[in-house]
Image 1 (tube, rainbow, N blue to C red):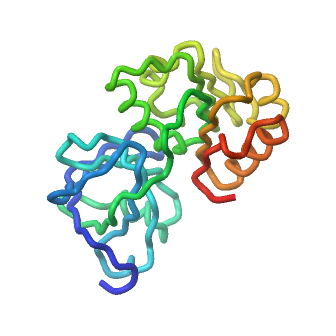
Image 2: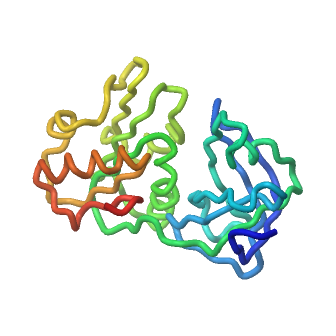
Length: 229
């Protein structure tokens, strides 16, 4: 297969629909393969036609498992990589890279995610909880279109308790805020700017939230994003 060069091939072991547009994949973990919480991989399908179809996905389980777990949002566009992934059966072969760093936990702060942007934080949070960390002095602001789009709801409730805010842009639901994460929303809900901020979502979302926080007085050095700005 020509195109992007991958050092590893891995078979699909299992896949499960999590909601209307997210599938959980469990794939082979290559021999000697190790990763740390929050890392991601680049992935493609080892089939003709996907030579240049490459996308990054966060590994959502921990290194002590014998497989790699990925939660992938499926695009409705038939020519997309994720649409192709959704059609694969167990035994299909993928190509993957070495894991690479996305976010690093630097201390107490606020996690701000949109949609599947929650993924890099899930593994990090699970690892911290397993190590004995208590995270209820941290906060999570999680934006989605609809209630059915929310991932890991029960786990996030357990981790953050009352410091977990759901905000929905396209629907209303009990105990959830309707609207978007904008300057006024952050001004109302974030009073302490001397802490770390972890932001993950679409590029425009990350850029906008980062800029709002800077305008409010947060230091650039305390803001982590997946994209470079």
